[in-house]
Amino acid sequence: MSVIAGSPAAVGGLRPEDVILDVDGTAISTVGDLQRLMSGERVGRDVTVRVLRNGSQLTVRVRPTELS
Image 1: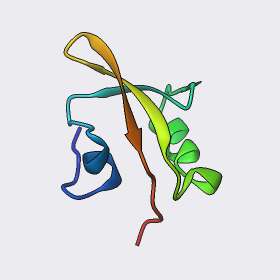
Image 2: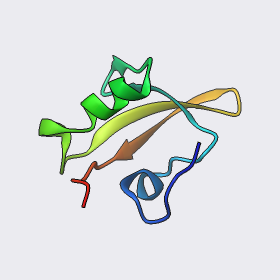
Image 3: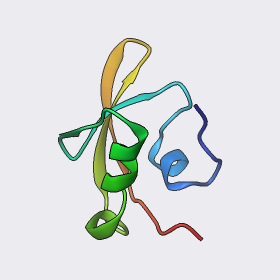
């Protein structure tokens, strides 16, 4: 719904209209799925995020960080 300026999502190229399909090949069905995948060993390393944007699928790289 929104992407915060300067956030890892914004730096990785995600846009508010993007629908996240999977992270590192793991399907995303709910916000909880996404939150679980963006923690632990993925924090601080690049992950592949596949999104649906304007009817096309594309892949972006995002580096999750710890929330402050």
